[in-house]
Amino acid sequence: MQENTTEIFSINQRFFKVLDFYGHTRYKFSKDTGVSEAVLLNMFKGKNKASIDVIEALLNNYKAISADWLIIGDGNMLKNAAQDVSVAASPTENYKNGDKYVLQIEKENRRLLADNDRKQEIIEGFMNGDIIIKKDTG
Image (tube, rainbow, N blue to C red; front, side, top):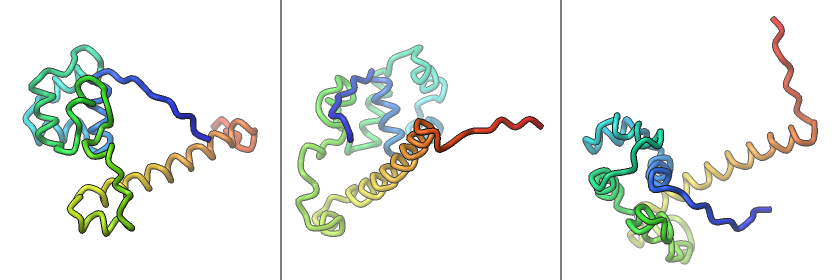
């Protein structure tokens, strides 16, 4: 059972959530945009907040990301997330209607849900005592 909770992220956390969403690393973002890896590492460590140049690079590189969400945490991460993309009968129909990101996002969503379910089963196994980790003594 999932709770309906709203997490509040800092701008840096939202920034890295976008990279995670696309499966991109700091290195890839740096290579794609010219933003130095040192700047990204300092953001990741919380030493610096994202500058306007970094924000602009992200928004120019990932057009589906909502600037309002990224900068102030308002709304959904994806611009069209407020619209119901499931109106079409299938992912293929959504794709034919021009939403080129839907198939990719739905595929990644299915992968993440399956991964989450697997991890939840492991956690429940630990909690129930069904899974026991034995220390290697040798």
